[in-house]
Each structure stands twice: as C-alpha cells, then as structure tokens.
Image (cartoon, rainbow, N blue to C red; front, side):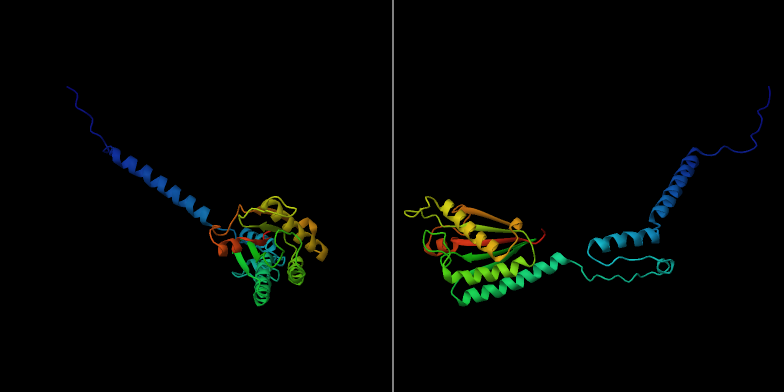
Length: 233
C-alpha cells in the first residue's frame, strides 16, 4: 500500500482567514475616517468668507500668507443689522411707554421671537363707538410713527374690542369698529411718511381677547390697538 505523502506545511485555520479580513476592513475604515477628517484650510477659509459676507461683514481677501496662519482677522462693522434694529425699536417703545403712562394711557411692549408688539389701550385713543382718534393721542401716534419709519420694517396695525355689542353709531359690529380704528391709525402713519408698502391693518373685534371678558377690568384690557413689527422683514 502506497504511503501518504507528508504535507510540507500545515493548513491555515479557518478562523485566521476571517480575522485577517476583519483587520483589513478595519484598516480601510480608519484610513477613510482619517481622509474625511482632514480639512482643507483654504476651503475652510472660503466657507468663513461666505458666512462673514452674508452676515454683513467686510469682504476678506485671501493671500497665501493668511492661509498659512491659524487665525484670520475678521471685521464685522455691519454685523447683525436686524438685531440692532430690534434692540433700537424695543428701547424707543419702552421710552414711549413711559410717556404714555405719565399721561394715564396704558401701554405694553411684548416680544415674541422676531415680532415686537406695542399695545395701547384704546379707551383714551378713541371716543366710545368711534374710529376718529382723539386729538390728545395724535402727538403720541406721530412720535411712534417717527420712531418706527426709520427702521423700515413691516408693520401691522390691529384693532381689538371687548365683547359688548354696539348699540348705537355707524358701526354695526365690533369687528367693523376695530377694523375702522386700525385703518384710521394706518392713515395717520401714511400721512407721517411711513412706507405704505410696509403697512397693513386688521380688525379682530372681540375674537382675540387677552383675558376673558368677565369683568369691567378685563374688558378694558381687551379694548386695544396693537402695533405688530416684524423685525425679520
């Protein structure tokens, strides 16, 4: 019987082949991660340049010596113009609020994100059931217009009432009265020089109360005119 030829080398275990494949895959994976984590300084600076210019910063001229430095001097003389406008509006409205309070007229400043609201109680703005502004309120309306028109932002004037039905006068419903009051103020703003393309007027009547119309105090609070400024416009 023929003798079996002795193997020169022992065969590789099956698990070692799988282990080798796993190590190769891991090496490839880490090489890929390294290549993805390598940032081109020039491209990074170009991204910073685009962001800077879009936010109002000065244009950046890139030179080779700049690209070799780790820090880039950035100048932002006009940075965040909308934020500056918003802060300016809030300050001027707060000052006007104090003046109105001294005259016995209730007013409030409210901010919701990019929207700034200036709320004025309408009891001392209009006669009962009328949309004709009282002469005593006209200087304050003009001052408000002068303060807001320079920033050139969209402005919506909203009229609101309580829920007591109208019994006399030319207006049949609170909705009509609130809309007429908003339009009357809008006309004063146009006369003052506010860009009419940025103005709009709305009347909500009793349908958007701040508080329930359950007491005389609450109803008085709901009778108001609101100036809604969109600072992101």
